[in-house]
Image 1 (tube, one colour):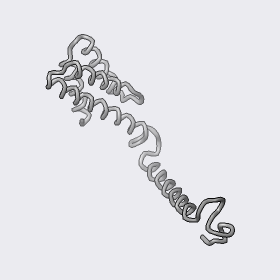
Image 2: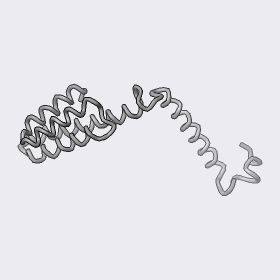
Image 3: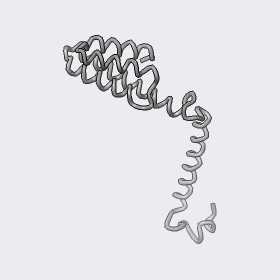
Image 4: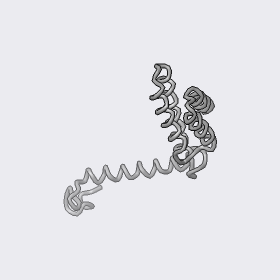
Length: 133
């Protein structure tokens, strides 16, 4: 870029030439990143798409809560285990929902309502194992 392109100096509308160049580079990087991401999923629901990433994040969050519940229960803190399992149910029900999440969320919820913390934990642990967590 020449100074003449910047209308008489190192500034264009109060922006330095260096900032204009940096902004242009960031724009090119952003466009390139969008192109790469489009090639890695294209649609919002296809393999690797936004919905699948969000669904996977929900499973990971739920399983982290199940692990916390397991640790709490082993430490003899059933009240905290129940709270962690309730958080797991919330994560499993948060849209977008993986179809296999709904039945386990209902099972954990029902077991907790019946006072069966061990059963709720077993259901959550089984689900997480099946989902690689």
